[in-house]
Image (cartoon, rainbow, N blue to C red; front, side):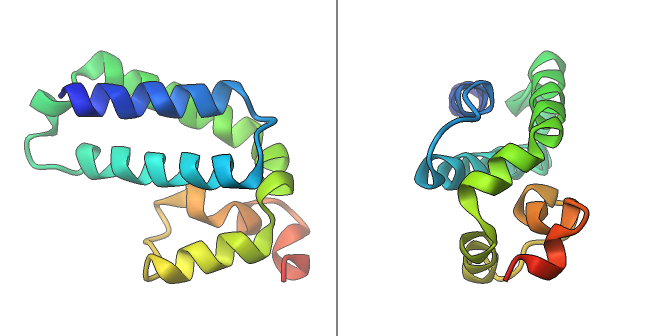
Length: 110
């Protein structure tokens, strides 16, 4: 659980500073992916207690509300390359699809 807690704290740091560079934003997305691995673990209740799970949801909400900022920093080309490298994550890993979640950006992203 300690690793999960550290990942959530790292994610929180990225979310609270949406003015980072593309490398930091990409790292944030990979950290969020690692958190998802914990959330999807069969014994996730022992790995991430409910209060940390709520924290992840709150941070996701902040990411959602700052999609424009994060996407502007990272750009569509880098995002598509990362998705491809990961083997195109499932759509419910929505953080990898910021370019498709912003109205008007999906067509012009690349």
